[in-house]
Amino acid sequence: MKLPNIKTKYLVVTFAILGLLSVWFDFFSNKEVSNQRNQKSKSVDTYIPAGMTLVPIEIQNIESLKNILGDFGVVDLYIPSLDPKVPSQKIASNVKVMRAPLNPDVFAVLVRTKDAAAIAGRSDPYFVTVQNPKNQDSRIQNSVTRTQIITELQ
Image (cartoon, rainbow, N blue to C red; front, side):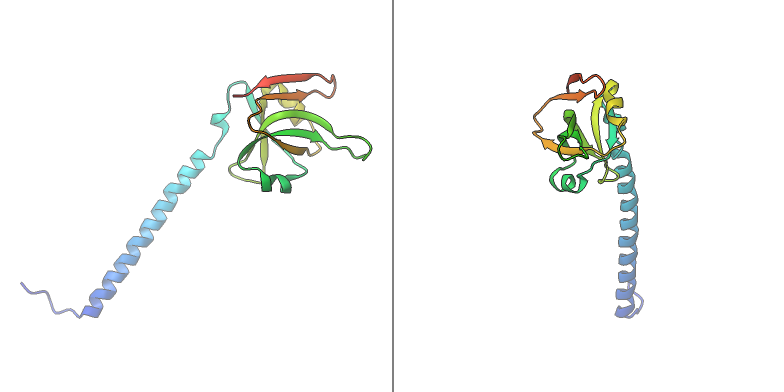
C-alpha cells in the first residue's frame, strides 16, 4: 500500500496548522475553566464564621500597608487626629484584616457582628498599624462610652 504522492512541504504545513489549532483550542478552553474556578474560589463570604462580619474599611496609609502586608494580617485601627498636639484615637486592637481577592487595594476587618457598627460607622479613613499575627484577642473601643469589647478569634 502506497501513500499518494503528496509533497513533503504540504504535509509539514498541514501538521503545523493542525498543531497550532490544537494548542489554540486547548489554551482558551483551559483559560475559561481556570477563570470559572478563580471566580468561585475568590468569594470569601462563605468563609466568615458565624457571629462575625467582614467590614470593608478605608485606609489612610494604604500604600505602606500594601507593601508590608500579605493577604491576611492582624492590625490596630486608629482615627488620626487633625491636630498634631492631640494623639490619634485607637478604635480597635488586634483585629484580623484581609485583602479583597477581587481587588487587592481593598481591605476588610473581621469583627463580631455586634461590633461592626463601631467600625463601619466612621467616614474618616483609618490609620493602620500591623501587629503580630499570633495576637488573638481583639478589642473594639466604643468612642461614645469608652468601653472595650474583648473577643477571641481562632
